[in-house]
Structures are given as C-alpha cells and as structure tokens.
Image (cartoon, rainbow over all chains, first blue to last red; front, top):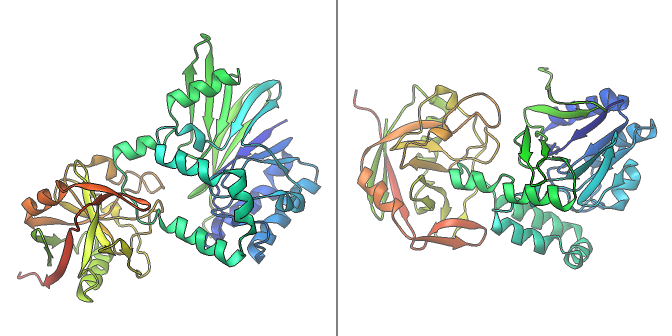
Length: 246
Length: 168
C-alpha cells in the first residue's frame, strides 16, 4: 500500500541516462504502487501534444504500460510542460489534474501542486506566468504552427541561459515563501502539502495559525539521481535512486 | 599565464591557474585567442556580488558559443573577491564563454559536493591588476533589458583582450 510522487524529471532526448532511469522506475517499483502522481516538469519542455517525436512516443508508451497494468497515474502540469493536453493524457492513460488538487491519500487530505505559485517573491515570474497561463492565450498558442512554437520555446529557454551564479536574493526569490505556504494551508484547510519545482527536496514543518503543525514535502529533481516520495497510510519516505554507472 | 581585458573602464589583468583548472583555462584562452571577447559586454552586474560578461555584444545580442566544458570547481578554489570563475546554467557542466569576477567573498558559490546544488562555480584565475576597474564596473547603473535584469544602462565593453605567456 504505497502511493508514489515524482516531479521535475525534465526528460529530454539530451539526457538518455535519466530517461533510462525513469523507464526502469516505471517498469519496476511504480508497478507496485496504488497510484503514481507526477507533479509537473516531467518534460524539460512540451510545445504541444502534436509534437510527436520518437522520444515522446517512447515515454507515452512506457506510461501506457504502467497505466494498462492497473496503476492509476495522475499529472499536474509544471512550468515547463503546461502545454500537455488531453491528447497526450489519453494516449498515456493518465489523468490530468488541475493546478491545485486536494487528494485523499489514505485518509489524509493532501494539497498537490507543482509549486511555482508558492514562489510569490518572484514577482517578475508570477506576472509572466499569469500572462502565459491565460486560457485565451494558451488556446491561441496551441494554434500556432509547430515550427513557430519550437522557435518560441527555444527563445524562452535561451533567456535563462548562463544566468548563473544567482545572488542570495535571487536564490531566495526562487523558493516558496512562508506567506504563500501559510495561505495555501489555511485556504484549503489541510495539514499536508506536496510539491516540487524548487529542486530542493526537503520536509518542512510549518506552525499553522490554527495551532497545528502543517507538513510540506518538497520533491527533488531528477538531475543526478531519481527522487521519489513514497507515502503509506502511516508514514512517508523521501528517497533518491542512483543512476546506474554503465 | 596572464590575460588582460581591455575595457572602456580600464584594464583588468588576470592571472590564470592552468595547473588548478586546466580545461577551464584552455577554454578561456581559446575564446580569447580567437578574439571572441572583443566587443563583448559585462551584461550582468550585481554590485554586492559579481560582474558577469563574455557572452553578449552591445545591444544584448547573444553570441554563438563552443561546446560546454566540464566543471572543474572540485579544485576547491574559493570564489573570493577578485577571483574569476565560469558562469553557467543550472547544469553544473554547462559553462561555455561567459565568466564572472567576484566582487565579494561569495562562499555560497564554492564547491561542496558533486551534485546539482553542490558543484559550485569553477574559479580559474584572479585579478592581479585593475581591481579598481572591477570596482568601477560594479558601481555602474543597471536596469532591465528584455528577459534580462541587472544589465548596465550604459554598455561596459571589453574592447579587446591580450594573452601573454607566463614569464617563469
């Protein structure tokens, strides 16, 4: 009786090692799950369900095998792959969830989200997000020719090229803020949040206004290892899975 | 090995540590020797942190680069004031042409472990003359330019570079 959570895999054809690790995960322990939740940025970028490369087909097929085996799989879009739509979901056999979703995990209501909306100090990004996630604009964007979208995605990504090192202030801006976290706990009246996005795997305890303790579990990225959260009825483990050396 | 950056604010003379960061130094010299850095700008200036340049032309035109190099920050040279290190993306092994000069002791940028958060930024040299030029650049007025922030309002230009072999 284990439910598993992953996020921030940033899968792309340029990282065959990480793709292989993900496939191994899907074929092995993921099969032993009550459910698998993917909380965004499964792909490094996604410019539309009509962009069907052999790489995309491979991932879809692997997800499909998992869902066909009877493991329900849920997906919340991240800031890199928010253009994933119903066509992809249907093919892979997974269920798309809204950007905020309260799941009942063995009796504990748990707020699931990608996590970018919690980084409320990054005003520039939040403004950008509001524009780019506007349904009207999204609808228009999906109608653009595939070639244009590829170019646009490339341009957006190159905006963040060689932008590091980041200063202490910038790093802070990229993390979830206490204000946004507290707001989420109280607004949805829950005691557990699971999210990714910040690439800083950790378990945080928050003193809530109600006097209770809220638990916030931050998933890790799949950059140099896999990162998996396993939740059971009584407990949870946030663990990493090493890349095989060959 | 020494390289001088001749900027419109004055000269910055750098000593490079080829013994400590051989691939990084070779990479930097290759760009310098093919005059890649001529007419590039310091495009990212944060006054209490560092000045970054070597990848953009005036007008924020990004230059095409060579292949990325491996991160040699496990040489454990500290990002102290005056140290020059390679800029990169979130990927530790993604440095190409852009570099930065620390204007403070930036311990948070040092190598701690071979993972995404711990790799740090590879120091491969230090300013031996012209630290006052670095300080003049850190104090320039900055603003936003397109997707980029902390961009000097008036271009800080590397006009050319000269490479001199070590005398010893």
